[in-house]
Image (tube, rainbow, N blue to C red):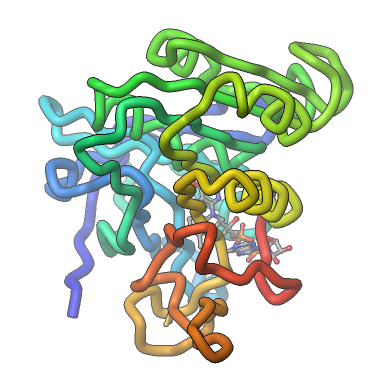
Length: 266
Ligand SMILES: Cc1cc2nc3c(=O)[nH]c(=O)nc-3n(C[C@H](O)[C@H](O)[C@H](O)COP(=O)(O)OP(=O)(O)OC[C@H]3O[C@@H](n4cnc5c(N)ncnc54)[C@H](O)[C@@H]3O)c2cc1C
Ligand code: FES
């Protein structure tokens, strides 16, 4: 059983429309891997009983600080956005498997959409010695966050917005499909809304490129006890259910079945 701990908020501020970045002082900083998440108990409001899962966005190992970047979508994240430096949060984590990169992999494509870009940020710092091409899709110019970080840490970057106010107009999957054969990544890492992940999955599977996708299923316990977060994974003779919180949230794109039961917040 994982223990929860009270951690101090160092800062919490808006970084784009509806998007916040929170720095939390925590001893988990040196254990957290890209793609893992923390499960947050919300303070002050007893009606918000369930913890909220938010991915590790980045880590400052020297300061022992974990960053989360989150979109305000409901009551829980609204409350989170109102917290201030000096407040404390009860967090459980780091939870989940996280992304992984085999030692032979040199070229990686990172594909993110909306708040699904947040869980991908720490990859660039954690595995510094890889060559990255980032494909980032945002709703519009005001929704863009952490673009500078991706520009600085990637060898190549493609940007789209739905309305064309920054970068190319349209969805990032279109650009990814157009460029992927030229970029020829050995590995794809993706996070975003279900329709986006489905397209990435089929692009990767058609070309036999290894691909890891991070799911954002609704969660209860976060530690494998309640089965609220199940998703389907292919087996030889059908499929079996896996838990997004403990078997994931990162799955191989050629094994996970993305269907309408998988929900996403962004
Ligand atoms: C492993 C994991 C990592 C995540 N990482 C991030 C992250 O880095 N940044 C970020 O902004 N969000 C992330 N999410 C989504 C985040 O957990 C939800 O947006 C949050 O719990 C919503 O809480 P709320 O009380 O504000 O919304 P609620 O009032 O509970 O719900 C508002 C809306 O959000 C949807 N929603 C609620 N919870 C989830 C959920 N877990 N997954 C998908 N949709 C949900 C609901 O269906 C509803 O439409 C992650 C989710 C998971 C499972
Ligand atoms: S959230 Fe309870 S088993 Fe995954």
